[in-house]
Length: 299
Image (cartoon, rainbow, N blue to C red; front, side, top):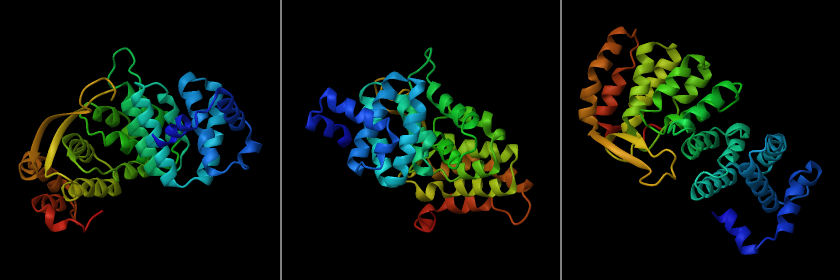
């Protein structure tokens, strides 16, 4: 929250905020701002749009953010995203739509992925629909994103939630995605192995996909236990929205890699029998049998 602490520390008056807001509306003034001033202006405009959801502000906010992309490196923009997300959670979802500038306007796949994950869990529920956030993010990315760079990474951010309730939402739009987007989704990785992610990719393999996506999805499954931070496959439910009160993630079940491999073995063998040579399914058996032997060798 350092960005917002600066506002508190400096005790900015209304006139200060109005001045920053005016600067944010004047593209000719942006080039004269130093990086810290630019961040302050972005903060004010973010808060304005997030609080009002005034559609007339979107074009100006996105133009300002695109200017910021050319000025601020990925680490600085990621820090802003983290700070804004923390602020939104503390204020129980107020201003969550401001995260759209990171999701829709940024060009870095990592930032788009993080923004998709954050907006999915911070979206204000509609009519009691716990999945309103993931549903909105997926719909926006598929139907309004236009296949922009990082679309697959952003959808991968939703996938990383690992919650089985969300996977059907991704499955519904899978066939609408380009091969490039599908391949980019396979790059999504996490420090924990979730049943939801494994089953999502197994479902895609069984339903049929291009040769390139097939190989990349197999590699995604194979690498999961190798890069995992804990030696278990977990079944989890996310608290949606994240500020609803309670633990952010409910652990439903955890299973050792060996036991989970036994569980999915019939599905893998069926895929292996249908696969033409050279076969890649055996990599899953190899990596899952002894993850430690491959740790540090895959990214």
